[in-house]
Length: 402
Ligand SMILES: [Zn+2]
Image (cartoon, rainbow, N blue to C red):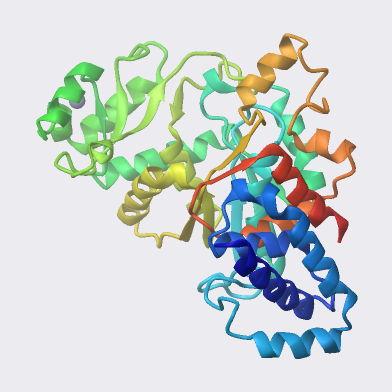
């Protein structure tokens, strides 16, 4: 797009936004509409001054003038792609929408969490229903203990104390109950092949011998997994009976639970068999009555696996949408890197102003609504976004002002 066209579009979107919001156009909204028209993230810097000028010119007009000019322009702005407000949630019933955000206990929330979680929170707020923050802590090897408290604090702030916190490790008996259900339905079996052996079967699209076990034998072997004097770590794993000929090798009889004797941060040594995420996530989504799920794109295969579990249990899979990833150049978004940096005293804590955490941004004066508006504007986009730190913060700033 050349600069002249771009400014024309900027004016059109500024007018459209102003008309929708009592005469005040929002710069961030205009820029995100321009992204849909083909503006590249790395061009923002080049055009931001001009766009700002256009937006402030539009904001100087009266609402009547804006409406008049906008009517003349209608057709210039793409109606299909640009939406004001939140996206529609297919099949949503007033007061009955149940959604979740499911962080792992690896640290406090950062921008990446906020960008994924806020859209679900806002949709529940719009339709009415329940919003869960579910801490997925069934891998004892991957828990940063302070995360429980940090996630609770950040959720209270970011979701206005409206999120109900659920901790998966407190729900182990429920997962065990479902394991028995799946074994009973002949949809799960205990596999005692070594990892190498199973990979070989999978490669050849052949069933492993354990697949033939009867329900009774499977239940006995499951007890042997639970028993300290039974199978040892690595000797047995519970698998879902999907299809060993599935075109995607990752779908072939994937594991549901395994033995891990690392003491758990909360449960200590109470359990030795831990559900893997596809089992615990499917069970919780069923138990909590999830109606809609918005999650990161990298969970597509997992969603496929969870769908299979829903199916054998005779449950309807929730409506699902995937979000693209944000690559924000110059910002560290890995919780483990941040945790390490805090341990090494490179950062003073989760609120260190060098960090892109919610705590740090809160200290700098950002309000929860800045994150809400930002994610509302991004909507349900599956494309990955690459943006410079400065541009990202500029956009966030523009949403913070309103
Ligand atoms: Zn086997």
